[in-house]
Image (cartoon, rainbow, N blue to C red):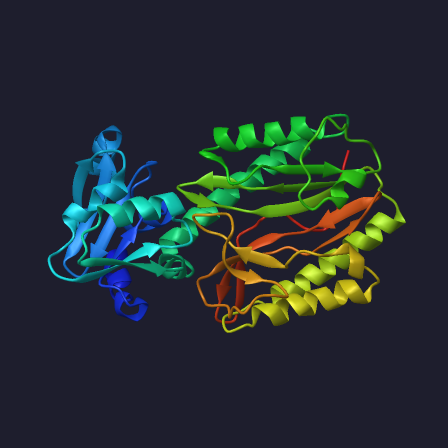
Amino acid sequence: MSTRAERLIGKLDGAGVDLMMVTNLVNVRYLTGYTGTNGLALIGPNTRVFLTDFRYTEQADEEVVPEFDRVTVAQNLVTEVFEYLPQGTLNVGYESESTTVDALERTREAFPERAELVAVKGLVENMRLVKDEHEIELIAAASRIADDALEALLEGGIEGRTERELALMLEHDMRLRGASAPSFASIVAAGPHGALPHATPGDVRIERGQLVVFDWGALSGGYCSDCTRTVAVGEPGSEAREVYELVLGAQQVGLDEVRAGGNAKAIDKAVRDIIYGAGHEGHYGHGLGHGVGLEIHEAPTLSVRSDDTLQAGTVVTVEPGVYIPGKLGVRIEDLVVVTDDGVRILTSIPKALRIVD
């Protein structure tokens, strides 16, 4: 099986470059295994060089895959990398989406005239889009940690606690279960606060009769999970139940539509039409889902603006919602692996409306 570096080399001609200078640390990790905070990979047909500084020399020796030569240089890696370029006239790709103007200027000043810097966009990110089985298992493990933590939290009761307290408890429990961190800042939003899709947990106490939105995930083995569940504290009332059932049905349609070869925009529309058709056109404004992997938001996207076609092995969320200002919010989200004939759902928590007493 080809290594990730070899797969990248196979894409260099198409990008118009002779070798690639990878500085985005997420991409560096994907290609080399390195998890530190200062590293650079230079990759070409006859070049596999990893650069870091003194602080990470030992870590690089332990983590970086053997095909790379490991070099310790000064902390400013981009001004040192030119010494490791092969001979001859070269087009050297750099990651334009993550390279600052300052870093680009310093690199140009350091590079010899024979080396032309060429902006390259999304080359490694596109490689990361389809996950291998090991990556999928790491994401599934992160999802299990997150699911177990929420189940424990709900079993302990949430009425009378604050949103902030619940978010901290959830994140602490995930760490105790093996997560290195939450994969993003946890959302706990009760009652009217739930109408904010990205609400920040506050000192708001959970009251009986409210819906509470939990959007959370674990980071484990470098990979993220993402899930949303909306629960009720006691009986939430007929309007809340009606909205919940609408979102639940729409989410199931989304799950049924997702498969390899599926048009992401069309899948988003199928779900959006259901919610809009029920009179909530002004209450659902975000996309249906996004890719998840080493980062919490990756390609592809499922939205009205997406041009993506889903591929088998991609991990995506399916997360419609309805948000009624001043009243309530409902979002239901599963994390799924796209397959040739549908999805493999990684999320284990049931989705029928849960009444928490």
